[in-house]
Image (cartoon, rainbow, N blue to C red):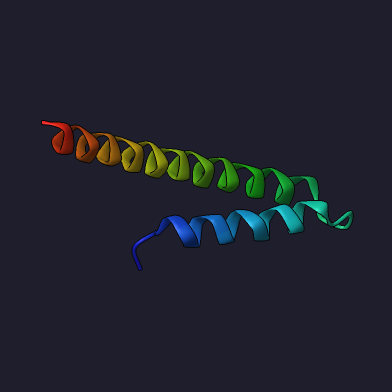
Length: 63
């Protein structure tokens, strides 16, 4: 299944809740943090691309 912005945000929320659990091991915490960081980077890239598309559409409208 292809990653979507919405599914990445949902997973980040899940990871956040898991990291709040005091019973999680350090190794698991690190793995979750790494996954969350990758997802956060993916979401940032999605937002950057969306902003660029919106800017391009606005520029076409003013031409």
